[in-house]
Length: 394
Image (cartoon, rainbow, N blue to C red; front, side):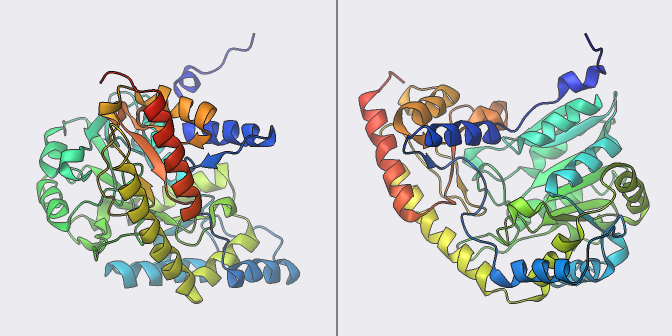
């Protein structure tokens, strides 16, 4: 047998892709499956973005680009981030990457090693913990609690910092909960980090343009006192319905940007050229499709919350961002992962069990409302019928 390096045995997974594969297989076998599991918009990429990629191909944009991305795109990213956050961003600090996960991979690899602590949200995006464990660092979960409206607590986060803490990962608006951390809480965290300039911050703001109820998005880059140690993660996947294009970007501190450039040269060389021209069209072209998509997500959000709160044994807090609801199933008598599995196999509804996002996810399932209102209503009806017929003692 081959002998592999030990840390590869520590790599976890993102179960949403396993659920997607199973849902797809059931659908191909003739089952009527409604997917509320996968986290991707059900909208087409806007036409002007697609046409920009087609034009780039026809114009001969077939070769390598700089490892950090083409300059016009980095300039557009810098201008867009500066406009939205108020932070002056230089194109020299922007790195274009093949999907948001690559920024996570690079940042965690840069700071994770045996003896280091890395804080991350729990429940949170599963790749955070997976990559922390891969590096040999100690994963330190920051509990994300329903009673705190699924926002992180500055006090609780700061209390988990040790002399070994190297990196803190933050995510707002959040996956899987839809929680949005208020600015006042972020203010407290930033103030508490003032005397720890050795700690870097990875701020995952991929859902930053998806907030509701009049809430604004507070970027960690907007705080001058920590700007020199914030790694901003963002991209096109969610905002522009471009998940399959594999396009992300990061804004890196001056001290780190050349390190990630070298990693790019060694690992992915560059992002494919036509996609970069599409990304440029997305940022510089009309934004009406973005506004329309978020408005539709808002309407669906209200439907999901209303219908979830009618389900037996279920309560559902209203998410403030992203396109996920995280209903509490504690009174159904079911554990989350067995319930998610049964809903897919027996009711034909794909969901994700809360423990797939961390130990604090037990008692919850994630519902993505990136599906039509008609399908959402049908799915919630199926879930209700299943829970009524399969009630367990809580």
